[in-house]
Length: 298
Image (cartoon, rainbow, N blue to C red):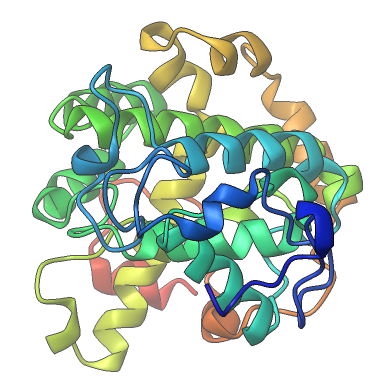
């Protein structure tokens, strides 16, 4: 491919415009057509139904597995992770390589760039990860009165998700809770993470037809939902989860410790342009309040 150049002898070279080495593990990857075995995908990675990207054994696509693993390792020590914006050139080149099925050395990429790629991937899942047709059910679960009722109702709605969506949701919530637990170094509380990631996970049907004030209201409610999911990850998801994420994620964190971390930490770094308009939407879940009341309380 003309997009990639290699030094003599088959060694990989730096891509122009990328801050870190954009290495291909095997030179044969440059000859692959989009979506071949180098990426573990049978088609383009972005904008496809998640189930179509998963392996026959139901596993997530290999690039997403690797990306989540690197973010779990680097995310807690990366200040402002998921909040900082990546440069357009680096983002475009990495996304293009992943979409073409090239065997990218994901571990060599900056954590900030991988976080933006993950948000881009989530944003482009058809009907979103939490499925837009389930929007009203998610909102109804959020408006339940007690913590226990909220969690139980969310378990019910989660079981209605396609299996691939539920698997990625569990992995994502585990990752975000892991980063939030390390807010002293990541400077990203559960609330910060929900504001940055939440809008990519759920929207109501025909969102594009909503006026701006209604769109902001929807965004606020989705952020509150995602923050609750991150905080309650162990209670909502761990009992069904097996594998590395279940072993690595904290079991039942003391809620007073969560509060202490959030009080001691705050967001730093350049704000992602996609979320600047939403940074004021910092609200806890409210019991049985209407959408209008939720906005007025701000």
